[in-house]
Length: 304
Image (cartoon, rainbow, N blue to C red; front, side, top):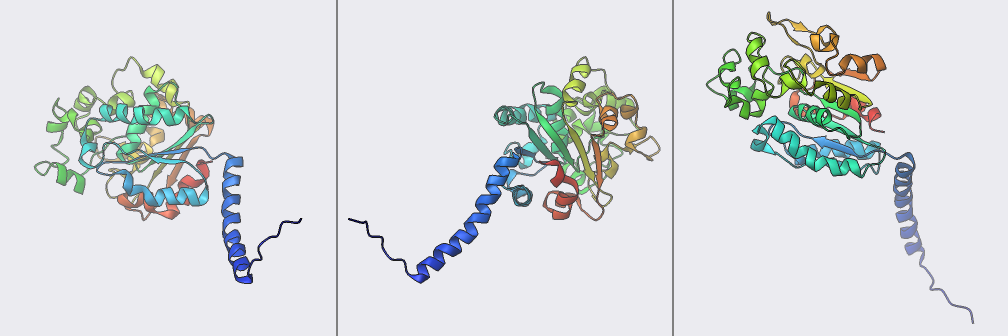
C-alpha cells in the first residue's frame, strides 16, 4: 500500500518557495563564512563608552563577513573607564584570553580611542596571544595633549598647559587619561611619572622591553586609523604615532625616536610591510566606529 502525501495548495507552495528564496542566500553566506574561516573579532571600547555603542560596527562586520563571531567586551564601561590603565589591561586580558584560546587560527582586534592603548598593553604583556590584525581606531598611541571637551568635563579647573600638576603625581596616575597624558613642555616629568604610556613606548627604563617587543611583533598587521577632523585626539597624528615636539610642531611617526630606534617594533612592522596608515578626513571622534565608509576603507580587508 502506497503512502499518500497531503496535497499542497499553490499558495502554500509559493510561501515555501519564497521562504526558501530568502533562506538559501543566507545559508550560502554562512557556509561561505565557514569555508573561508573568518577569524573572531574582538572590540575594545574607549573612554566613557560601553559595549552597546558598537552595534553599527558589528553590523558592518557581519554584513561584509557573514558568520563572523564578534565580541564587544563589556568591561570598564562609562565612568569605570577612568580606572588606571594597567587595571583595565588585566581585566580585559582575563576576558579576552579564553576567546583567543578557542580560536585556533587567531583573532582580530578593533580597539577604539583609549581602547587602542589598552590593546597595546595586552599585546605587549600577553606572550601567547594570537592577534592577527590590530586595528587601532583613532587612538592616542603617542599620547594626548589638548584642550578638548573631555578635558573640560573631567578637569574643569585645568587646561592643557597646567594639567601636568595633577597627572604627573601618584594621585593623577590613578586616572586613565593621566596614564597617557603627554605634555611636550614637561617631558622629563612625563617620562619619570607615566606608569603606562612611557613604559609601552620604552621612553622610560623598562626591564621587560625586549619581551614586550617580541610579544607585540606577533601581530600580522597594525592598522592605524585617524583623521584631521577628529576633534578629540590631540594632535590627531597621535593616532598614527606622530606627536608634538617642545615647539608644538607635529613630528610624524617616521621621525619619532620610538620609530627610529624601533624600541617596540614599529620600524620592524614597517619593514615587513605590515604597518598600514589609513587617514580619513571629515570624521569626528565619536563617529569612527559608526561610519561605514571608514569601515570599508580602513578595516574590512584586514578582518579575513
